[in-house]
Image (cartoon, rainbow, N blue to C red):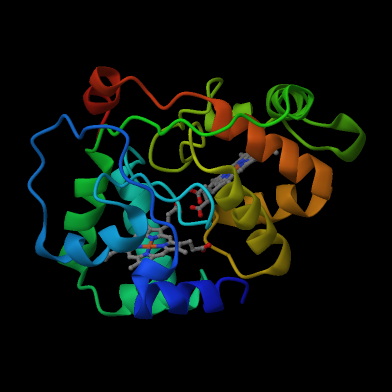
Length: 220
Ligand code: HEC
Ligand code: HEC
């Protein structure tokens, strides 16, 4: 798969790839579970992820969503060699503790160079209204008007790294990811052109993550 080489490099020699420093502070009192030290070389000490290497931001994503993804890597409904190895070593209790830990992080977003305004605008339109010529609903219908996610089922996309969003959409297209209930995302991703994938990913990356106070209040 696409990230095997990069992932293996990360695992073997983490200094070889750029790991961005956290830009924000974790403002919650959130006890670090023992396993989290092994996640931070890739996902960052504050769960901020990496803007350029398709390692997702985990901070502030819904805990049940995160736990379900770890289960998906473990049972093979979601394929990524590195994460499959890591998740297969985690007990149910460890998965829950790690998911809760990252969900409770109110890390702010690092400033990165914004994408082209026209690209972002095209993405915003697709997110809001979809593309009815292809029977494609707006992403906002499920992921929320501001992309902040809805409950445990529909993850937050706002502030997620565009490279990772693009990769996630392509994993549904290729069948590497089957974690979505009733194949809903596979159906949607299958209808997106490459340009649409790029623009909608750029749009969601450009959105602010939830304000820390609000984010921690809405945690399940
Ligand atoms: C060697 C790098 C690396 C390490 C270490 C690592 N991850 Fe990951 N993680 C990734 C990559 C790359 C992805 C994206 C996989 C994909 O594209 O499907 C990912 C994806 C995830 C996701 C899915 C997020 C989403 O938005 O769906 C979760 C949850 C996750 N990792 C949790 C963890 C936890 C918890 C640990 C520590 C126990 C950990 N990871 C350690 C690289 C890593
Ligand atoms: C009918 C509801 C629905 C619509 C519309 C929808 N999604 Fe989703 N989306 C989901 C569900 C459900 C999941 C969680 C799947 C899972 O559990 O793995 C998801 C997950 C995702 C993820 C994975 C996030 C992560 O952290 O890995 C991305 C990226 C995504 N959607 C992008 C989009 C985009 C872009 C659009 C619009 C073009 C869109 N979605 C429209 C239901 C929807």
